[in-house]
Image (cartoon, rainbow, N blue to C red; front, side, top):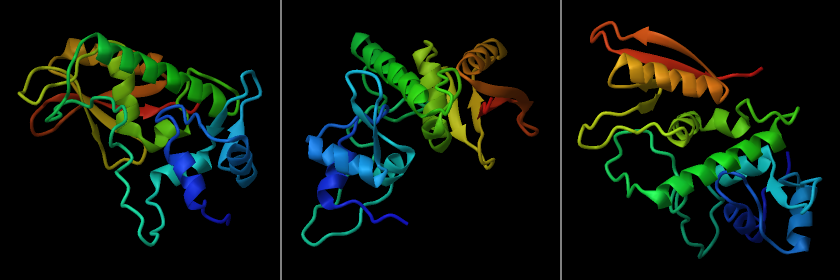
Amino acid sequence: MSRPPTAAQRRVIDDAEPVTGRLRGTPAQLATLVKRGFAFRHPRPPHDHFLTPAGHRIREAPPEPEPAAETPDSADTGVFAARVGGEAEAGADGPARAREVHSAWQGLLELRRMTNPDGAADRPCGWERTHLVRAAALALEAAGHRPAGPDGSEGYRVRATPQPEAVAVSAPDDGTLAACAATLEKAGWQTGAHTEPRTRARYLLASPRRR
């Protein structure tokens, strides 16, 4: 087992870009993170440094308590988060949100290219498998689907399920549900339509494709 990162190393890891894991730091800091297995140097120019899966796990895990240290915010505070539907504070729509979503999706595709063993961008990566709801919601929002609003307005909703690698996606009608299924399948997910026994509501079970 490797030693946990130092406080200075943890700050560099925590400051990585939310989706791509791109790092900023001094050459010495970045070289140390590479040596520790928390980062890697991209082989293509400009040779930026990115978190490895181990580095992403460090960032998601609660930091070790330190004397006189401030309690850090949660991993989702202040960073981009895809809308899963029904959020109480969804934030503003418009061009700024569209740019954020586009940038996050492009970053995720790059993360796939960097972390999938074969460099494939058409198949979900490890980060998506540990953030199923957020990953599926990003694929839907990036394709232009509208999430359900807190006021009950119609749109998609993505929710966790008891299954280890599956999320449930609901929509107001079969046409929208079919469109969501097509989007997820194009983004590298496999989907299946199901009916809730009690309410007879239709929904999708979606899982990241492995091949």
